[in-house]
Amino acid sequence: MKPVLEIENVFKTYTTGFIPKKKDILKGISFSVGEGEIFGYLGPNGAGKTTTLKSVLGLIFPDRGRIELLGRPHLDPRAKERLGFLPENPYFYDYLTAREFLDFYGQLFGLAKSERDRRIARLLALVGMDRVSGLPLRKFSRGMLQRVGLAQALINDPAFVILDEPLGGLDPLGRKEVRDVILGLRREGKTVLFTSHILQDIEMICDRVAIIVGGRILSQGRLSELISEKVLFTEVTVSGLEPGELAAFGESLTAREGRVLLKVVGEDRVEDVLTLVQKKRGRIHSLIPRTQTLEDLFVDMVKPQ
Amino acid sequence: MTFTTIAVIARNTFKEAVRDRILYLLLFFAAVSILFARVLALLTVGDRVKIIKDVGLASISLFGALMAILIGTGLVYKEIEKRTIFTLLSKPLRRPDFLLGKFFGLVLTLAVMLLAMSVIFLALVFLHTGTIEWAMLLAILYIFLELVLITAVAVLFSCFSTPILSSLFALSFYLIGHFSWSLETFIKKARPGAVKVLLQVLYAVLPDLENFNLKTEVVHALPLSAPHLLHAAAYGIVYTAFVLVLAVLIFRRRDFV
Image 1 (cartoon, each protein chain N blue to C red):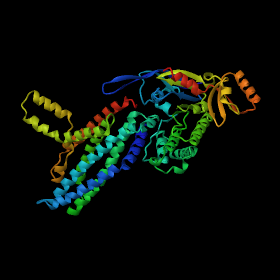
Image 2 (cartoon, rainbow over the protein chains, first blue to last red; image 1 turned 90 degrees about the horizontal axis):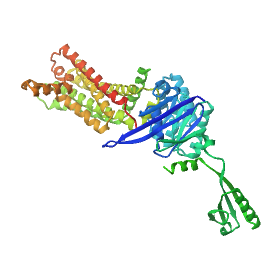
Image 3 (tube, helix red, strand yellow; image 1 turned 90 degrees about the vertical axis):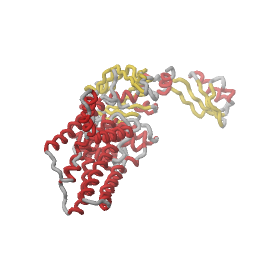
Image 4 (cartoon, each protein chain N blue to C red; image 1 turned 120 degrees about the vertical axis):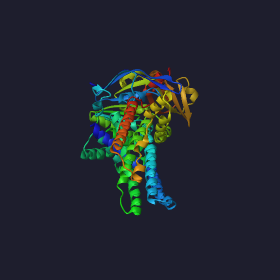
């Protein structure tokens, strides 16, 4: 797979305050994003996600390191011709209407008027904003701005799209729609890099992830490689038995309205519980094996820091 | 591509500025001020038309400068503060092009506003003299050159400072620029020595915006020498270019945190 983005050993220090104080934000970041994949970039707040993206986009200048974008040095405007970007909490010119706003960005790519009109109509429909295209952006809600922002990132039909928290500020339905747009981009052969702190979203659609904590990449790779498929424990909901009778099999998480939620570790134990319930004529309401989630992995990594 | 992108940014900046209410507020007060000249003329003994011309041109100059400063100082800063610059610079757009686009957009706005004020002013003069006095336009053209320079200064400060501070800096530039000519008199009177040299250096560095002031000559129909006009125009263009280069140098290497 040809890398669309290659980041090698990037360092960045900010100097802040009246009495200048140095703060290391990126401490040697390296990763690459391959063509056609959806890449998730995870990290807690302040880990350096946005700083990494800003370095790639040329909004800040790293102290050291190499960044290559679409096969060119990242500051080359030609590389940016095939790039789309949606910032976190996007703010746009609120005096423009959605249509004028997209038209403005289309002009920056030197697109002809007819081509711009065609693309704007398609994109507004794609993000579900075609009915409010004549409204000034100052009347838009955060979720609506997010959608128009996504349309803006796609105006030049980019080969590579960078999205900073694209699912923030959206309701569950909106999140699903944006996820579908991202999956649609992959089907079109585009590459997507996005950051998120909503781990389920990343788990659902990413091919590969990198986890950044405290300015360092702690882990990266395919999701299946990072998360083990092994069953960690099983959650069993039982009724018709006293909590005391079940205590020997595992930790009782909740006991309400005669139902006990039991956390059972080990498959043999699960069978023991089932046998006991059968014997005492109780009922099993649910039995859910829990495997490791991205969240578990993430929490494990962030904790020691 | 560079020229086109500058034009695209300039057009958008123009759109932004003309949709800003502060512009119309200033235009309204400018109109009131120009028309107030008529009231002043009534109270004056002597040539009333001269008073109207004098106060009218001074109003155009002052309100034009206020427009340049109040809108100019916010232009770049707002883009950084509201983070609209993030998406903008992720497009194939060079930073100098962005800055120049902002500058030319504001210059275009000021040209339109100056035109509006000139129409009101010339109409008022016409009501008194019965002729359209085209000579007034020469004074207004040089006011425009001054505004272009002030815009460049406002944009320069806007690259690294907040709008309030930038406004203060730009306003100081405007005031210093209009009083620095008195240094010239001072230099003439100073005895040769360190003080005189210091004053000369100061005079060379500080802007002299009185270069663009043709009000007295135009109002009193005094002769204007071509070398003086050329010198003033060249002074404005060179000074503006210098300030813009400085702004680009600062803007090109800054981090947008």
